[in-house]
Image (tube, rainbow, N blue to C red; front, side, top):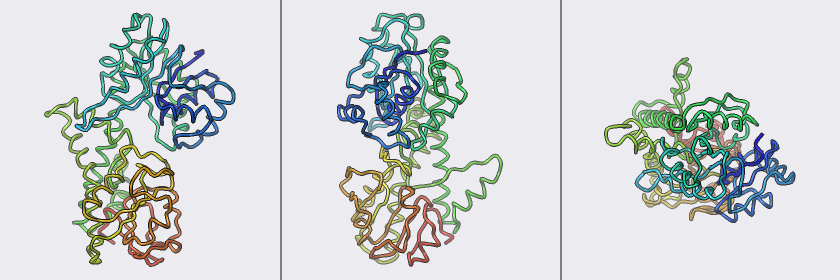
Length: 423
């Protein structure tokens, strides 16, 4: 059994992974370049929100199986779980992966296993990690083993999916893949599938790109709905009764560190001639915040409200999390401001004001707003009693189909739904 693991990167994936191994009797040392994040973990305080994380963190630290610092230590296994964002020109920024790999070189010894968990463009292990790892002086594949095992989890359900989801493991050779499989079998109940590193890298990016393309299709349908006088949510529901159809749902845009980012890896690899459908889908989804802002202005124009005040409700990229990475809400706010509208924003899960428009008070956000625009489907919004919502102009624009239209209309609100021209 593996005696020790060093996890580089203690964010939304690295910390739950570290805690999971620690809870299963493996000694884990977590590393993060952010001293505040390290100190929070040492004090059993969370710097990210995730169901079940607090209890698991408490157990891991109290039992002595999890420690944290800003520097790596020697271990049997090194897991790299750092961000892999895109640059302003939509090309992949792999500097975090390279730096994280370089940071462990002085601590790696013969027989160790290095695993990349970050979602990355195909060939990253081969072209970015291995050139750093050869600096150990160890022979790759004989003295040092390397693999890619991408996470396949969704925020809010990370622990459930870490255990139950199938996992893809791609080794630079068969021994590396088998060693990685045996490691994750400590807690993974799903099937662990073995392949090569580049295939594993491609599979993860393919999965997120599939969803992005599907959402782009739904967003185009939502725009068509206005011309057809239909409710696209109703149409999608009926279409999905077909046994071989699974249309996703529209929204104000696509966010999160995966779906809004990973397709660009394939666009970059494809060049001008390749990945055209993927590129068009990215442009479609990136255009939804502007479309949402324009629809909001159209609602105000209908009431002859010029330069109105908009309450944007929800800053996280998805419901019931505090994750704002690549969130379309921030782009919607920008587009609304470009149209000359006054914006105030609120999110019950984001307890620090990161955005200039943000308030921690829902009541303050909606009090004198001309329209309430719901951008994230938090349970707190779904469960709102509209009779208790005190706002000057009773107009709602639901971009996530998360509210009960009948209740809001019964409470005297004019109700608008993205992609619904039927009602």
